[in-house]
Length: 149
Image (cartoon, one colour):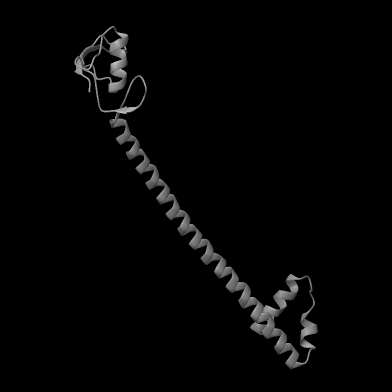
């Protein structure tokens, strides 16, 4: 019967395609057999340690991937919040610049475009006359009276 240390040695050689090695091992001197057994045990331990380390590395990688997925989901949620905030800021219907001025009908328009629209609609703007009545350019038939800066 073989000892546990000899089985590890045998497994290594059988895995390499060297069957029938048992008789060869038993014919070796005791010192050489022990040396080979110790070397085979060292290789078995190293292989097992490598497998354990590989499992640990895979577990660490899985943890890192889960953290990265959570961070990505948080970033997407934050981007959605930012987009919602930006949607609250009005954009000019003509030049698409952000503006805080809205007409009576609810459409937004910047002061510069309001001035151009007033001139286009036939109003004369001077330094003293800055009050204008603007028809909404989006055909909603709403008029807005405003003093331009």
